[in-house]
Image (cartoon, rainbow, N blue to C red; front, side):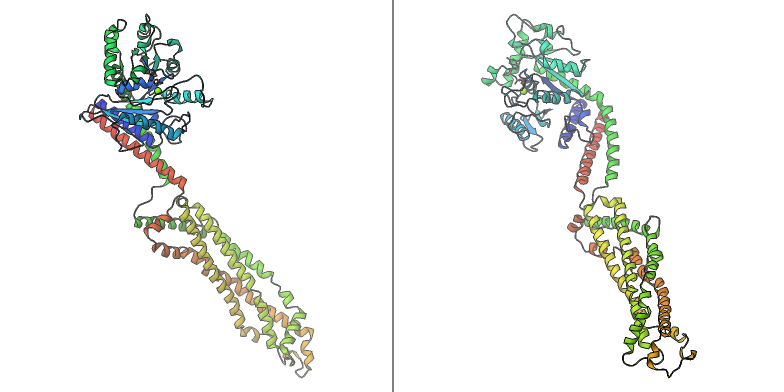
Length: 615
Ligand code: GDP
Ligand code: MG
């Protein structure tokens, strides 16, 4: 295969890949870069019934395009011609029906019709999504052509008013591209000044560099007139010489004159024409096909450096986006487990930084011990509990019918017990306050673990596992802190009471009547003794509650927040692991799109490199 055939084959392959990726010209420009637009193509433009489909068919040498009056072509048809040299029979293949070879070209026509309807419905609507058709034949030249809906002036029955503009916009979206060669079809039996094709071509290609004028229906001109003025470029000058063709008439089609016969007839027509005989070497569909192939080849050749640089630039962009989006998930369970653990560790690291400093939040735990707890302790209602009345009530009730003799042992115990009970509140409040701080830090850390954002399911599971663990730590913290309080109640510091000054030694009368035991001074003394003892316990708890909280909650959170989760994950099978790595669908789609495109661009680059070497 020659280098040039390689080039067109290369562009054909890239174009097909572009369509598979939804990367084609036209509307709905995706945010992703399109390679399509940089690829040279030939687009056929002209008014309705100007002979576009006929020209395409004669270039191919096959009947395969839907025909009929009105708007028949309603989606772009990307027609890729592949020259074969193995002598096998001609066949066609659609991109949307891979591996299905059509050898009956009437079936190709049906498929084009049906595939058009599949996207546009049976209505007369149009769609910019191209149909890709490849034709393999020994009678074609390598060429890519795009058949487009015919330009119209008015909407007909059943068409929306917007159709005139819609068609023009779609056609424009193809011919606007500087890489598009324009095959401008004008019928010879109409004044060239009224040609829609020439009007549009002049607008988008003022220099005429990429416009190829084709004059159809030469055979239908009024007797005594000819198109020499146009074909010689006098009526309307184009950069490239005009090409005249004589396609099959409607009558020929009705009579099923085959293409081989039609080509022969066309050759004879020019060879024997008194008007065009001198031009016959550059007339006819066969000449047109070769001319276009040559033009397309040189267009591709001149575009290769810029296509390559676009490809390289895009590969860089896509790779950096892929890095940002994260690599695709590994397929084997071991690697998946590793990924999950890595993600958990990343979260854990951030969480620790919050506790240890480096990231904010940990200092709020100290705030609980330094402010909240002391303030809560200070607010405990000991004044009320140790009021004269209450002391009297508790002590006398404890004494029962027999007033105490020296010191109200039972009364003391009850007063102290009652007072110590109040410590449970602040103890539990500290546990809870630290719990909520830790929970908040978990939430923050999850948010700050960028890698984890890709996997909403795993993120949720880690959140649940961390919160569950914190809940367990809180339970333990609560138990331990209340236990500290209970311990204070269970055994009083004997020392303290032994050191208390004895009332009797202060000249009290040991033989005094029982009622005297309840004097105000006596009760006040009891109250202040209890208060002093409770104060001592309070100082102890102020120190020991934080120790319990840190021991049970903070330290555990730091060391084994996700331990339980790790054990569970370790037991999971491949499928469950993959479910954990379930990604945000939008993100997954984006990455998939990027990855496919990256593959496309890389293989395009390889192919171009290969062609360059062969040159
Ligand atoms: P399109 O709408 O531009 O695709 O036009 P078609 O290719 O469907 O052609 C419209 C009609 O013009 C058909 O009946 C063709 O047979 C007829 N036609 C096209 N080109 C020629 C030509 O060169 N000579 C003759 N006699 N008829 C032609
Ligand atoms: Mg047509």
